[in-house]
Image (cartoon, rainbow, N blue to C red; front, top):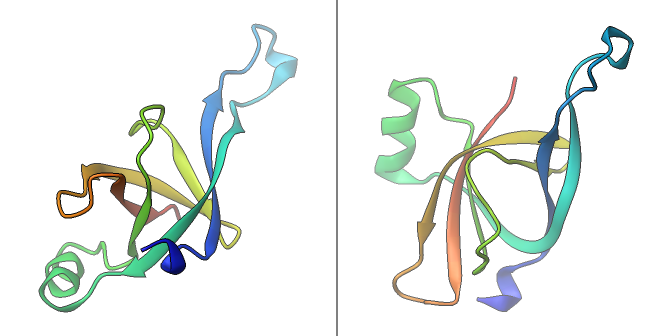
Length: 104
C-alpha cells in the first residue's frame, strides 16, 4: 500500500477574514501535507456518481490521522477538492479513505 502513495496532497482549513471589510474574503491555510494514493471511481461507483453529476469524485487513501475533518479541503494537482466523507479502511487499519469532489 505504501508504494502506491506517490502523490503529495495538502489539507487546508478555512481561515476566517478579519473584522474589517478591508480584510476581504475568507482564505484557506494549509495545515497538513502528506503522501496519498489517488484513484478515480470505477465501475458501479462511477455510474452511480455520474447519475447525480458527481463523476469528478476522487478517492484518496492516506495513513490514519485524527486531525482531519469534513470541513477541510484537499489540494491535489493544483485543484481544490471538497471532502465528502472520511471512511476507515477496515482491511488495513492504519489507513483511511477520503472521498472528495472537485470544486468548480
